[in-house]
Amino acid sequence: DAKTTQPTSMDCAEGRAANLPCNHSTISGNEYVYWYRQIHSQGPQYIIHGLKNNETNEMASLIITEDRKSSTLILPHATLRDTAVYYCIVRAPTDSWGKLQFGAGTQVVVTP
Amino acid sequence: DAGVIQSPRHEVTEMGQEVTLRCKPISGHDYLFWYRQTMMRGLELLIYFNNNVPIDDSGMPEDRFSAKMPNASFSTLKIQPSEPRDSAVYFCASRPNNRGGEAFFGQGTRLTVV
Image 1 (cartoon, rainbow over the protein chains, first blue to last red):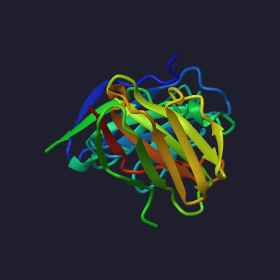
Image 2: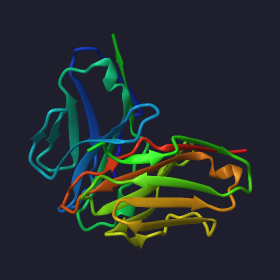
Image 3: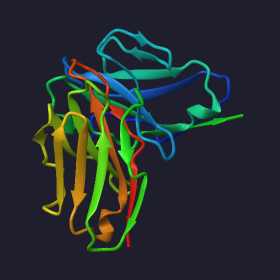
């Protein structure tokens, strides 16, 4: 059973903020939320991760709801180079790395 | 650091031939992972190492696949004999030994077995 649910695809206008939702209603207390993306023909790229507090880095912001059942990745000013498949993953530090399962993700297309 | 380096970037081989994929992880990273990506199955973990020791190889499809990590800076994934269904993009990734740390992926090797 998938631990996360994401929309299949979404479009975003260049220069606007892209808000990518992820549902993880069965998340456990020690599981982190990770976001990766994969640009066509490249390897997955780490974006950000968090446990319960909101996080921000040079790439994006991660907003986690208080009940931790869902989160939103925010790309503040989307560019054409942000077109990629975005993966939301939940994983506990003690989990086997075989559990870092990349599901289908969200195909984000940034348009001019 | 140049990141995780994989070679070759592309490999085309005939069915039955031996194929060796190579990976140089980021210096200082204790974990190394081999993944396979196909349209049908997405990204699958094949095997991972911690401090050069294989920890979990449950994702290795069958005995035709083998992986080694003779030292901290080099790993190989070998397929012998190769089959058309092995065609995929193979990614190597590494990460440091800190809780919650992210994994860094290489550019991948696109393998085509004809």
